[in-house]
Amino acid sequence: MGGRSKRPSGGRMLRIIAAVLVLCLWAFKFPILFDESIDRAKDSPATHSSSGNNWDFLTLPQTPLAANQNLIQIEFDWINARLLGPDSYGGTDKCSLCGCPGVPTPRDCPQWYTVEDIQDSVHFMDDHSDVLIPHSRALLNKRRLEAEGDCQVKEVTQARGGWCLTPNPKGEKMTTANGSFLVPFHHVPPAKRLVDEIDKLIRDEDVRSIVDFGAGVGQYKLALTERHPDLQYYAYDGAGNAVNYTNDYLEYFDLTIPLGLPKADWVLSLEVGEHVPSKYEGMVLRNLHRHNCKGIILSWGVLGQGGYGHVNNHSNDYIIKVIEQLGYVLDQKLTARFQQAKDNYWWFKKSTMAFRRTTEVC
Image (tube, rainbow, N blue to C red; front, side):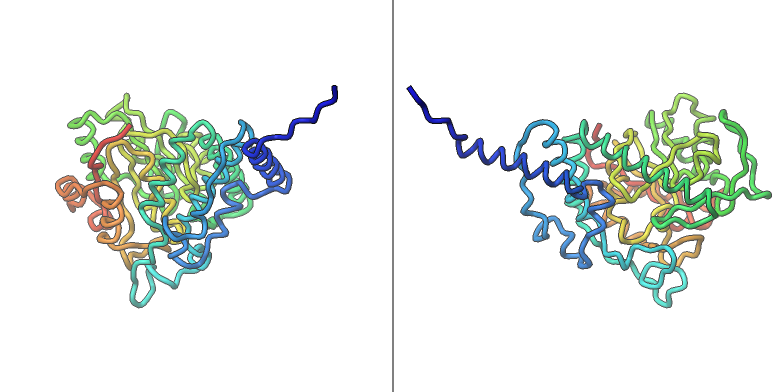
């Protein structure tokens, strides 16, 4: 007896169509890499909100392994696109829009993102860490190679806020387990006030680990690990030649992409955020938020504060408001200790703050 061939059911047909579409997107080089897709962010802050934006329609089907990984990466890129501001706020070559030294009436740059956007990015990465952390590492490696190439050509200020380190003949000599080098131009030795207060925090609260985002050449890593040899200290900097300059004493990073680095009890970030263009501010805060379990020690250049490569200064009130909305509280006592005048730099007296999570994680 002859028989009719079976046709796929409606549900199965939809899954087949979804898989074919994914393969087509991949074949035509759909921009799943973060830097190829999120730079299409719209020029209006409203389009970056977690509700009412142009990307809320994206609901991904559950598909077999390889295709599903591609879809996860695509959705992650779209989530992170909401953290970006317009391209007109994305440069470091000139700064006349807001938050900059030299502007007649410095003001805070607009907030292009919401705290919900930051939370979405963090939670999505943690939920799909097996796919997205390798994805993030691949992108970070790509950025590292680009930054290293920039610094081999000439001294430059890089497009997203980093620059190339140049030895300062008058700089203090640092001697680490990886060798000796001079503190370069535009960097200074660690402030004794901050070292002493972080030292006290480590001892009083049994702090086991610190992530240093924007570590320079590892000044605070050296000072703190000399006092606490067992402290897990992860030091990262965005200078394209930082790894070579310090003989691998620290690692390269880029705060303008969604990082998936090891988490620590506290994140330390001193005078870093103001160097990153306003377009990427949401991603900077996303990375500070994702990588700490207990809190953030932060110094962000205040409005009108001069300095090399300052393009996105902020008032303390602005920073406090955003970070507290993420689930932190300003530690008034610790902040006051960090801002004491003795053995301190003048800029730290104005802006160094300590934020504790209302609920510890990790």
